[in-house]
Image 1 (cartoon, rainbow, N blue to C red):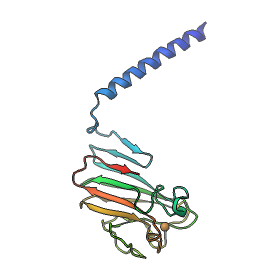
Image 2 (cartoon, rainbow, N blue to C red):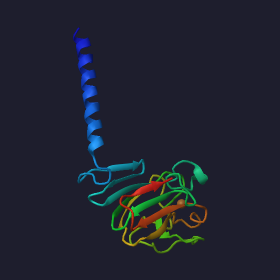
Image 3 (cartoon, protein in one colour):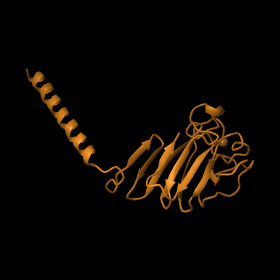
Image 4 (cartoon, helix red, strand yellow):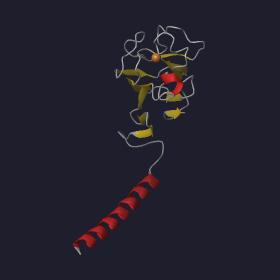
Amino acid sequence: MLRVRDAALAAVLCVGVWVATGAARKGAPLTAPARGDSVKVNQFMSYDASAKTVSIQLVASFGSVNGGMNFNGGYKGNQTITVPQGWSVKMHFVNKDAIPHSAIVLPDKLPLPMQPQDPAIPRAYTVDVTAGLPTGGTDEMSFKASQPGKYLIVCGVPGHGPSGMYIGFVVAADAKVPSYAM
Ligand SMILES: [Cu+2]
């Protein structure tokens, strides 16, 4: 008897929560969440609009696409991350491949250099850009998206960029929030 009543009570509570969250969602503005609210764009990106910070997971070799020469499964620019001008970017790099990889932000200009030297945005590169980070290696890039323009996130290990290991990165003056096109 008690069990049945508990189940009924749980059902009532569930409906109550469902109605409450539905109502809250309906009334919440889409572009201006409260301070500290993290908005998840996809499995690789979330942001805080009031703090103007975006957090990006950059997985070198996310699956076997392009022979593992990819970031988050993207290669040859077929994914594009867009960040509003003036926002702070935190990019968490991890290498899931059996061979070393790294990351560096370069101007959107092809052909890519065989061995990238300087980043297009200050501090927008991982440690060991040329040698690459080993399997399981991680690093965090923190930089400001100050200069609007089109860039590429490229692997800095010699030959990997020209082999297609790059995705698009845009700093947009007219974007309100970050986005991730794939
Ligand atoms: Cu690489």
